[in-house]
Image (cartoon, rainbow, N blue to C red; front, side, top):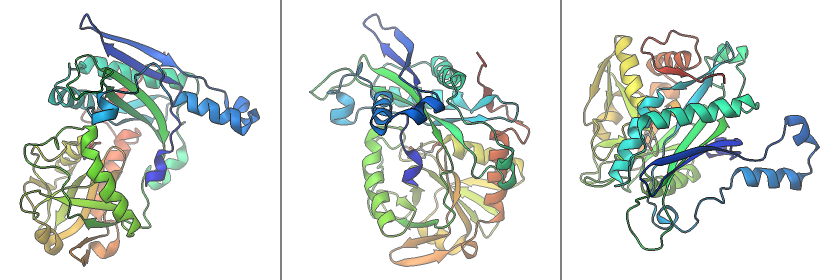
Amino acid sequence: MAGSFSLAVYPWSYIARYNEEKIWDGRYLEKPHFTPEQEAALSPRERYSCLEKRNSFPELPLVNGTTQYGLGCFEGLKAFPQKDGSLKLFRPGENGLRFANSMAGLMMPVFPQEKFVSACLGVVEKNSKIGFAPKYQDAWEEDNFLYAKSVYLRPFTYTEPAIGPDISRHPWVVVVGTEVGAYFNPENTKAVTSDKVRAYPGGTGWIKCDANYVVSILEKSKAETAGYIEVIFLDALERTYIEEGSSSNIFFYLKNGTLVTPTLSDTILPGITRKSILTLAQDMGIQTVERKISIEEVLSEAQEVFVTGTAAGLTYLESITHNGKTVQFNQGKMGTVAKDILKTLKGIQYGALPDRHSWMVEVPKG
Ligand SMILES: *Cc1c(COP(=O)(O)O)cnc(C)c1O
């Protein structure tokens, strides 16, 4: 899964600074790039140097609160190619709102939601105009867009130069884009619980912040080495209730026919995919419940388990291993509930199904 993010940042990005006049001073930034034909003629060294320039931002200070203390937050959202040649963002306003909440949570001046949405649209528009965007392929429809490509946008904050620990008063906001393909590997979707803690009551688990990722990355890496694709975190106090995956929310379709996901709290990241899936499941007539759910209940009562997030979309888990005991769900195959929800979500995102909730926002053609 990690390999799906090989970094080739698109040439156009957006950068804004909260300046001394307390105004967000933003502009688009263009990095070197070549047409595919020109690129084919480059030597490996020239190609590497071009990529390196695209991935580096010398206008930003290296020694600062983000690189020294992890004081930063970020977002992840996608633009989806449509059959008519346009591109559409999925619920960018929701990401803009969460970004503002994250910045407020880190005691930073907040980047306004409308600026966030317009910067995201601008980055996709400028890149697609110079050919940096995947083109819609009819073949994607054959497997319900499971292997379809999209543009991944990564907005993030970056603090002013600093060597002492302090809050940020004049941060930058940067938006970069890159192409992503399928994140999903149906060959192995085994998960394991972690005995470490991702988030604790009173902490920053609800903020999409850099600092939360250290434990997740370490635990996920250990799980992958042991042959799993995902790690599941339990609550910090009782180590009994399921919280979420390493960077994804989690759902359980129980034998009693209800779809359960843990209630949001300050230890759970409020996923936009999570929120959307609750809506879609309700549309499909499935009873949804947000509540605490213990690992023991899941191991005995779940028929289907899946994790959700922008990067993963919806990934079913074939089994969960907890304290050395493994329980398999739906004979290790993706269940019908997960399949139906995934098909609906992807169908809306790639324009094959009607967008009843007006979630999709079209990128201007420029
Ligand atoms: C981003 C993230 C998610 C998923 O959120 P989406 O908005 O659905 O992409 C879930 N958990 C964590 C810890 C995250 O950082």
